[in-house]
Image 1: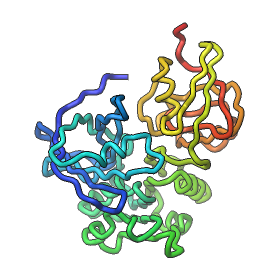
Image 2: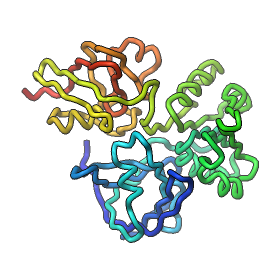
Image 3: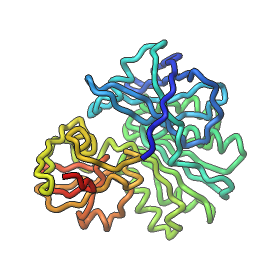
Length: 323
């Protein structure tokens, strides 16, 4: 993997969007070109005494020379969101990118955007771009409560009735089957939200009979079917046993222990960090969107950047051939 190019920047301003989501305006030291929707920015953070990197989706194209991101402080945070929420305007930052693994394909006859919670961030940029281009689209946005609908009021002022919001508190739900049925032939859907929402979208899309490539995901790797807990990883070939703490990913724990790993997205999308499962005590909580449901059911491999184990440990082999 190529080395990351870091550039200095300054935190120009912050603003609370909800009780646990903050908007950050980041000003690079060098002029920046507008970025396409779906792009994300790498930000250097400190997790305790350890430097690390977090990726955050950009909220707009940055035509005014500023990068805008929204960060939710998570109760199960590995430390990145807590670090970001502790920053004050004027803070010096190191940033990388922007990069884009969730690009918006132009020229489609229709677009369906589906956001859950903080998953609104990349779809916010897409909605603005589609609105400017005059493209037909709908944005469906779900959250737990009205106050959790970050950016909804500002979005509605700009895109009007193209935005529909629902909340768990009011008993609302997104009818994915109906929304997909309303999409013209050749249209595409873009989804970013919790694991359950993405799985529901995958099922509804498959049942609609539409081409698989017309459904695109962005993940944030913070949730699965089970609550996050610590677990043990055994690597017999290396004679290693490594504990993965609750607030650390399996990939991070393996890297910290000196196990050579290949990776890129750290979001459960690219599949580069997968390892072979030799045995498992407990349940594998597959949180990626790289493997199909059928592949996950075999428990042959897992994505170490997001997936976990509950109720026990796991025995694996890795691509690391040192030793």
